Amino acid sequence: MSLNWLVFDGDTIRFEIPPTQSITYDNLPLAVEEVYRYYVGRRFDVIKVTGRGPIWLYSAIVHTIAHLAKAVAVYDAINGVYVIVASHNPNYKIGQTLN
Image (cartoon, rainbow, N blue to C red; front, side, top):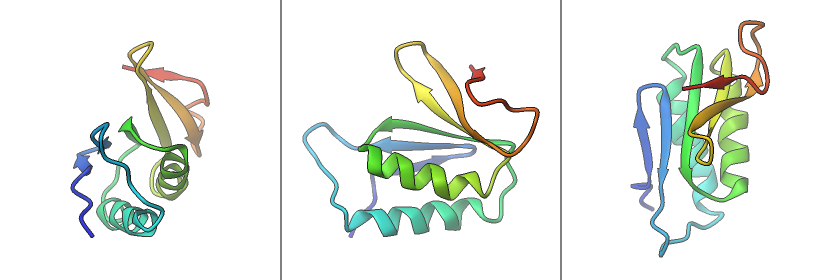
């Protein structure tokens, strides 16, 4: 099963799922495993998530990386910023924005 739509760029996870393609629930455990494997040995204060994807994919990925970084930020395309959605560090507040 190919996860070519799951792209890692340093501290950023990008979902590059074309509008004409959908992913299945079978992809979820594989995506979570790939994300965990990529980030478990790396140290980032904030891991960012962006791109088109279903809410269940975002939820599982955010849950996974929330244990691997001080904070997690999700991209808000309307305002052009990342928003902290999970934090285990007082330097990063829920709702705080990053450029």
